Image (tube, rainbow, N blue to C red; front, side, top):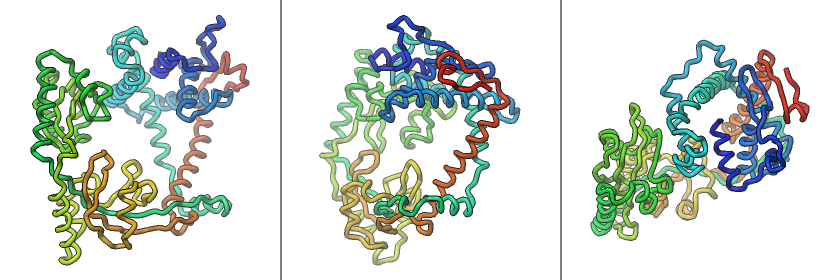
Length: 449
């Protein structure tokens, strides 16, 4: 049974409809729909994938959707078979464990925790992991084979031009207003009243956990201010120490496994944690965060410091980039000399409409090269701060043009080229693998090799 099927069983238990399962009528609940080499694909595997697509994209069930899902699963097994034939591809046990732990953690959240997962599977968590280890090793091998093939595909300037020329002029999309910006960020000072209040709350919680009066997970769900983990009892799994702030990493790296740490402070507030497992520089842990009351902070020092920095740049010729690296308190842009970029894509051109009202008000009065007066801002992690903003460029709304939007067009052209080449390649790989469609798949007329 795969994790996909575990999730499917949980979703079925909550009365979500799946077209292909009709056990109420006495029909077979599950069956083999394809054999790929030595691998079998069950109808429930396909149904689980279809259900996920339906929910994510708000689509209705269709035979076409089911057939596409089956094709994707077949192609994945074909990739695995060819990856195993390639003796140059290597996947380590550590890579398997990291992927397996992360995926099981996600499924636990979906089904309601470890106990519910073990109930659905009928085995302990260790046994579940043992059953699924080879499946995930196969997946990593296929991913590596796919990655190597994709990395060999490039889009030349000729490819980009030819791809762009195929798009009718009246079909070219219109890009909204864009900006490139840099900023220097300062956080308000936490007052002693807010600091004392937060410490009193977190100390009470920690004392209750240490005394055994309360469970760590229960207190995290009830009181933690971390939106990413509170609902899951403060749990994070397979986190790298380089993925957390240095103050957090320093405590997490030294805490004995299973013990409750001291209370410590980061830029987010006060924490304590329990490390559950450690694998090199990767850890599983639960933590509780109590933030400082942002109504009890002093903005004046941050505003005054930013005004001084702005004056140094405007009148004394100081480098904006150097001051950002030295003084800014927002880590992502600080490392880039203040340059703001999309954290997901790394793109520097940002849609004005997506920046939010605070940014828009600050930028509305700026010309290219101007630096704003200190202004309030809400950071991506939800913290309230102050910043000075430099408008590096402004690109007015326009229809896509290859001269001004080459990078965007190049990205789309490369994606299209990769898709076409990968589709041809997978068809070639399929010719040397035994594939046999059965049951529902055969009734749909899917051809065997």
